[in-house]
Length: 204
Figure 1: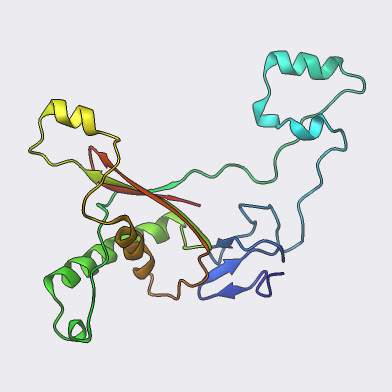
Figure 2: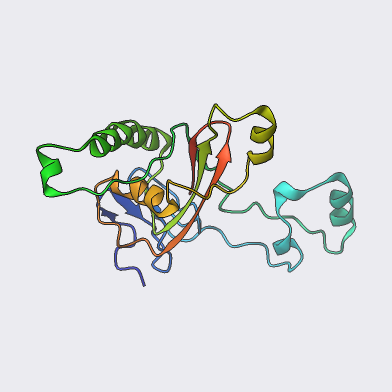
């Protein structure tokens, strides 16, 4: 049971469902995962077993004819929670630098670079309505060097990126940019790959 259900904690709106730990922006009115709102659970699906397995958005003319000829007729349900497109941040991924007390008054070049990156990254996330939740899924696309030939670029595009920056440092850069306690994150899935240009794909 989630004791913070429906509450805003550290700028994050927790789901109204006491059994769901999905996090949202404070202005959210419905959970993207389970469909709950402040009024409670979403409407129940039709009682028909077959109808409960058919989403309205998956209908085709042939399927419509089959459903109309069934006895009794079956009405596909519209899922309470629609698929949510990922948030694409058109910024090169970066690794979180190691910071010391000295960086508070005389930051190193790496820290200066990271702070400048953060000043662009955070507003982009806020504009897209993305907040860090208990489940973190991200894809880091690393721009291929301009010195590579067209042949090599074609071969490497989309292939796993297996050199610096480390994927855990890329994840930490995202988390640390919000300056909040991230101990509530319990599931992490992150990948990095070569691409024509650098960007970060964040899933909700």
